[in-house]
Each structure stands twice: as structure tokens, then as C-alpha cells.
Length: 168
Length: 456
Image 1 (cartoon, rainbow over the protein chains, first blue to last red):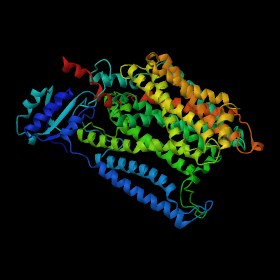
Image 2 (cartoon, rainbow over the protein chains, first blue to last red):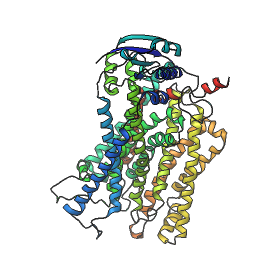
Image 3 (cartoon, rainbow over the protein chains, first blue to last red):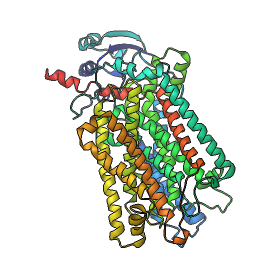
Image 4 (cartoon, rainbow over the protein chains, first blue to last red):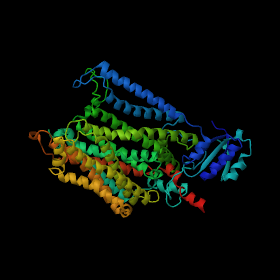
């Protein structure tokens, strides 16, 4: 779904950050910023904290409980077998198994959650505002409807090398 | 901007982002030079030797190996532990240096992680073959079966090992692959051929570099890193428990898990140093992997060596102090002065003594000595596993059962084969994947330069 957008192109991290700050002061809603690396200054200005860690915690808890139930069922209920007279329900060795499967389960499920949420899949066509977002350019994308202030001059004054109006 | 307490610059040459991309992407965009083909030929020959050894093993069974009733674990398990140890470098590099906020790791972690993946693959081969009937390997997984259902003995460290190594392999591959998605997108956007664009595009999964995407991506990386950190510690600890839970003199000690873990980090970092020195020689990455980086690795090695050295001393001390005569016999007689004394002293020289030269700046700065000592550590760590495994088994409680051990050609072939696998994997890696995390390096490439500018 493409909208009419104003796209500011920058070639320096500090300039983008100051531009974003100025835009925010003027209450302009920024749709997204594209850039070659994860700049923490940009991320903290533009994005909300993700809920992925909470999800990961839930996945971990579920994996731990399911693993315990599985190990308990197989070694105590379904086929209790005496190994040298040791108790069939012996918790310490189960801890190792629960620990490992919790890590494996959490990692796998979190990766799938990430892929699902970002809608990434092998062979997906990347939707990018211009050439160079993964090389040396930063793109600040603003919805045309949200341009209350004079967005163009704000970005130009902060050091944008180019301003484009196009569908994105 | 990432803040760092690091003094000076991490990437030399005050490069622009475009220059960083161009320099790192270069090996994936140009035809490989002669050394690459030469190395690939060597790797293929080694793989052929491995294939022959595999054929012998499958066709005639484990009788073709040097193991016997007394020394039931030989080169297979030695090489397994050795490769797993090397496989610790990547994740340790990424995770622990991330926790300690050591930004210099950014230019090395991709290669170290690649090493991890290939080393763990090599390692996993050995226990699989050691089963004797690898085609029944699925017996070690808990699945509903018609034998009872006979589930598994969860008290056995061997089963923990199966879980630990398969989890570690999957985690390393995940961490490695997800770490390189933005860089694959960079190569995708740069490449001119349609074929290349499609292939890299498939693996880049539609990465666009948007801040929302980066935010989730960073979070995912932190979660994976946080999960992998305890995993790194547990993998080699569990390998150590394979030994420590048994009753063999020389194995049955509580020091084993931390001792093995430090040994693994030690050998892994040594292998990273070896490979980085070679890659610096053949690829143009000196601005990213500077002399300073190598010096840092040398310092880690020096620290590791101190811990390893004190572990050796502690083992010998406890063998005497505990008053257990079998322990004392193994450590003082068999290892330090008996049949295995030469192996034991090679191990002490390579692991505990040689890295101490890194106290001197001259050795930390000299590529020649860095290379020599890193190779010596790799050799020393192999001998450590040899001493632990073979000396304990060959002369244990019953003198009537004592036996010697000699590897056969098939053993050697398998070992050479894993070298081929590792080398071929690494060569393919440097050919097709940016060996330095482009997106991470861009985040640190300006460090140092801007502070200087501010001062001016």
C-alpha cells in the first residue's frame, strides 16, 4: 500500500538524528527511517520498544514446563526403568535437559515470532525508499498528510542532500 | 551513536560508509585469486582422504580404528573434544565481548561464528561415527517406539551431550545467519547480475533496513545472544561431565567442567587468531582487523593460559593431596613421568608456558610470534585431550588390562577429512559471505575520529 510521502535523503548519521529531533519538536509524525546500520540514536527516537522479549519469556516458560512434563511422563509414568536402583524421579539430571530444551525452544520460537511479525520470508522483495539504504544513505520517510510544518526546509536545514516527493 | 570507553580508533583510515561496504564486499564480488584455488584444492584432497576413511569405517566397522577394549576412546573422542573446543570461539566472541561491551569484536565475530559452525559440524561427526552404526543414530532421541516404549536414561551425560551439541549447532547457525541478514541485503543491492541478486535476495528475506525492522532485529539478536551465553558454558561443561561422571582415574574430578570450558575458549580464541592472521595476509582487511585487534586476542590467550596452567597444577596437587593412590598414579606416574610424559610436557609447554610470552609487548605486536604461539596452542590443546583420554584409559585400576594405543591410517584419514571439511567451509564462507559484519562495523567506524574532531 503506497502513500504519497516526503522522503528526506541524508548521508550522515548525526545529521539524520538532528533532523529527526527537529521534526519531532514540530510534531511531525515520522513513518520510518531507513539506514545502513542500527543506529541507537535513531532507533530510540523513531521506534517504540518491541514486545519480543516478553514473548521470548513466555516461550521459555512454556518450553521449560513442557519439557519437564515430557521427561516426567516418559521416565516416571510411561515406562519407569530402574537404572542401578536409582529413583525413577530424579530431578537434578532433568534440570540439564530442561535447561537445554528451554534455550532451544525459546530461540526457535522467538525466531519464528520475529519472522512472522516482520513478515520476512525467503525471496521476499524488499520495499526500500531508494538505492543505498543498505550502503551509505539514510532515508526519512514522512506521510504527505502529516506534513503540518514546513517539513522540507526543516530537513534541508539539518543537512538533507535531497528531498523527494513520491509514492512509497 | 554507540559510546565506548575504548581509546583510539577501531577502524583505520576514517572510512565513509560507502568505503566500508566496498572494502568488505570486495571478496564476494571479485574472482578469487590463486591462493583460494590452491587452498580449495588442498581442502578437496583432505576431504577425499576423509571420504576414504569414512568408507573404511562403514565397510569394515570400528575395527579399522586404533581403539581396543582398554582404550575404547581414541582419536575419535580426542578430535571431537578438540573441534568442539574450537567451536566455542565464535559464540564466545560474540556474546562475552558483547556483554563486556567490547566493540572491537565487531570486525571479527562473523568469521569466528563461521568457524564455530564448521568446527561443530566436524565435531559432531565423531560421536556419530563412534556409535558404530551411525544409521541407527536416531535411537539416541526420545521418540515413541516399539521397544517398550523404552525411553532414554536421562541420568546419562551422554544423552545431555546429544542435546547440548545439537542445540549448540542450531543456535550457532541461527545466530550466524540472523547476524548476516542486513549484509546479505547489502550484497543483494550492490550486485549487478540478476542471478546473484536473486540468490542473495532469497537469503536476505526482504530486508529493507527500516528502523522498525532494525529495532526488532536488535531485540532478536539480544535475545539469541542472551540465550547462547549460558549455552556456551554448558556445552563444554557437559562434554566434561561425559568424563567426570565416570570412575576412571584422572577423569573423576570436580574441576573438569570449568577446566574444559576455559580450555575450549582458549583453543577457540587461538584458532581465531590463526585464521585472522591468515585472512589478513590474503584479503585486504587490515583496516578492520588491526594490529590492536590481534593484540587483544593475545591478551585473552595470555589470561586463558594462566587459568589453564593453574588447572594443571591444581589437578596434580589434588591427586597428591586427596590421598587416592589411583589418581596419584595417573597424574604423577603415568602422565608426568611415565609412558605419556612427552605428550604431557608438550601440553604444558604449549598451553601454559608459551602464551606467557604475551606478557611482553614485543611478542604481542609481532605477527610471526602471534602466529607461532597460536598454532602451538592449537597443538597443545590437542595434546591435552590426548593426555586426558588415552593416558587415563591405558593404565587404570587393573594392570592385567593395561594396553597401549596407536591410531591407524583410518583414524588419521578421518581427522584430515574434518580439516578438509573445515577448510572448504571457511573458503566458501570468505568467497560468498562478507567476512566482517558490515552493518555493525558502520556503527563503530566513526568512533575515535569524531572525538578528535570535537577536541579540535
